Amino acid sequence: MAEYETVRRASAGVRTAQIDEGLRAHMNKVYGTMSVGLLLTAGVSWAVGSNDALLSIFRNPETLSPNILGYIVMFAPLIMVFMFSAGINKMSAAAAQLFFYAFAAVMGLSMAWIFAAFTSYSIASTFLVTSISFAGLSLWGYTTKKDISGWGSFLIMGVIGLLVAMIVNMFLGSPAIMFAISVLGVLIFAGLTAYDTQKIKTVYLAHAQHGDQEWLAKSAIMGALNLYLDFINLFMFMLSFMGNRE
Image 1 (tube, rainbow, N blue to C red):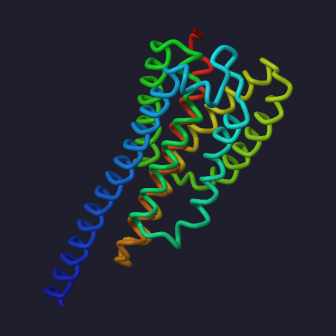
Image 2 (tube, rainbow, N blue to C red; image 1 turned 180 degrees about the horizontal axis):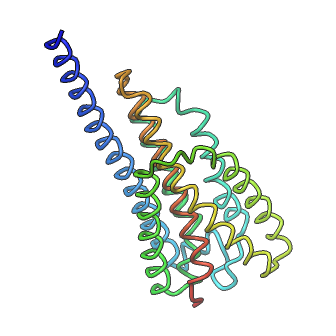
């Protein structure tokens, strides 16, 4: 009996170690995919935004007002997110990763105007502050013992409210409303960073023993997309506070 108990505990320890190792690899995949997406976005955004000829395809280089193609590019990432969420189960992991990188490139096009609107120093400093904030929030979400899954519904409602307010303010052009949107945006996406990190960890632990590597690979890409969106939105809302106009 004692020998059986020893064997059982040893087997449980081995399984726990395997899950912990798999979780680290899974999170590395998430952060790695997200980082490549951010680099792709930054590269496309800088290449277009720092070239008046390319930027003029989407916006007036002087007023930065979007033309028809500019509006299409502006809303294309949102449409692609819905397409990705609805179709990821039918994709292979390789196709899902390729779609994510295509999405990151399109996001770069939609953000290119910031390189014409803000100084390079303010963009770089905001990116640094966002990176530090994101890392701290994500680390807290990963390590905390507190269950923050209940935040999800409130944060999603907040995101929907932000989208509606931003669309309305496109026509109103109110600085006061834009300021309020920016404040709420920073708070909401700070919360989402911690929430999404914990959710990625929880989902992995719930499915790791099933051994479905294809599903786990696609789960890592979806997790990378969620954290990527948290980072991008946190950066853009912080840029509205920290950015110095050209």
